[in-house]
Image 1 (cartoon, rainbow, N blue to C red):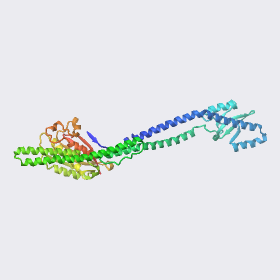
Image 2: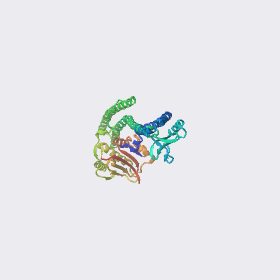
Image 3: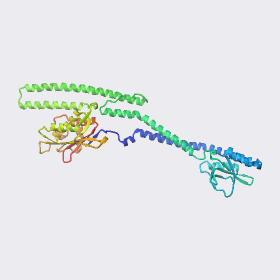
Length: 453
């Protein structure tokens, strides 16, 4: 079984987060809208654009034809020069050996050719390049002579979709940038709420979330702020109640202890009552330990190597325990030293009670500590294991539940069943990882992985 409170979000979860989903959805919507808009404009503007360009070509050819036809022969050279310099129109004789390339291949050209031929004659020819000179070339006749009229391409607009593509690209880029900004603004309140929730889960008191923006965000942040305040009040009330319970229960126990000492009882009866009183006191202590919060604000740099050695040395004094240690030097982590020591003591006590081998009255307990990884991935791994019979695999999950004992432990029950539940609660408060499994060779192994300094 593995119980874990993750230290950070992975890259894969980040990429599959709401920001990227919103960004891609807005990007897809923008691209689809842009494609539909360009297609619609192309269809709507096709006929008017064909009519306009055809009329322009027909007008230029007709005026040029009339000017050349009605001008005096000695003035034609000067007229051709004026057409070139002022209007960008060139006229060349059409020769049989001219190298002619076909007109531009676009959606408008076939309809332009059809309309122009209807006005200028079916023998009108078109070309995009004649004798290596690029332009918009159209032929016309003067009497029995044929001529080429060349217009500069800038005079004929809209024959290609390059401008449409350029504008569409610019608008698409701006739209994607806008989608990124919108996604960031939409997800910012959620990121703040997620961070505040994570801090609160780790025992920190988050800053109040801003109650502004859309009504849904205001209500969510207000509800979260109220929840934090109410839970803090509950926590404070619980601390007062637990302190009162500790005082109110242990005071009668102390009086009972004193009365037993003064009473005229046999040694056997006195020892039995003493045992019951100690058991009741231990159960009260377990309840208080389970209910006690672990504040992240109390965390300090804890030398886990030294703490484990001290704890192992103290446990080795017990007559029915034999401790074996393999503790690396320099294992340090942020935490509450008292709570971590309580966790290790609970694990040792759990192993002492239930980790005996059938043929021995002494419990063999191994305590190991190692440091793995480097830099941000550096971890301290603590292991406490016994050499007993272990736990049936299908019942391991039950071990960490409060007030739960397995059948094998019921006959020797002298607690409330909170030992491992306290361990799990403290480990989670420290942002660590807890694993419980059977040890190879027999026994139970409990492993705690903490972020190292």
